Image (cartoon, rainbow, N blue to C red; front, top):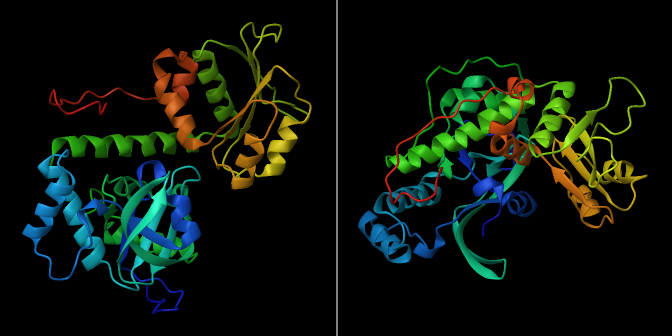
Length: 356
């Protein structure tokens, strides 16, 4: 691979969103290795002289289990990643746990790479990146947030959305307002892909609503979800020396097990190992613990939780959103009122798979 050809920290206005897999599964790889990558590598390397027909044929042979429309979308995204993204362009990838967009500068041409993931080979197309900083999703305008929900692994946000993100990264006040109704470029035409795009967008919209809650409302939301699971809860009163934020047990008194102790942190950055240790202090055998942090958890905090002798589950924003949606029908009216949701029905073909 070539070295970075542009050492400037001023990022290009040409911006590409590159998702780190479903649920940002490859985000740590992106950030620690200084790169962005897309999959579908079973199609093999893409050369400058490969025709569209040749690429379609290769992807047909490599992915016979997928529909023609899906394969065509993949081919289009691989071609863009290899041929249209340029050295010096700006790339963005999203962390749904911390609600941060990581932004950096493309430093190399695309290469074809093979690496081991869970003891199996993963073929992918890679570009090295110099990561420059982050922008919080909460700081973006509603229109820009809405425009960043495409299902595509690779796409170009609108010019207005790109400009807004770059201004926030530079610490500037916004000078342009995104135009209502703009949306990123997309290659999808298949109805199932459109449905998946709406599902992905709805996930982020629900997370946006959770993020707007104040700390006491979030505490009540967590307590309501736990009640929907069949437990009785006690929520700590406001003020100092509160102790545990939410306590739950089958009888609500702690006389029956499990006794569940819940800590709630709201948008204060990632919780570190010390926060985990402090929370676990004083817990005893038989206790069960939940730590809810909408700002996510550091790697050290997750390691601390894994080695804990007291059972502890960490719940970041993606898990909290999933729990809210999963148990929404069982929530009491007060909890539903905190994040009002509406069920939407979408027609699908009988062979479309379990997408909803």
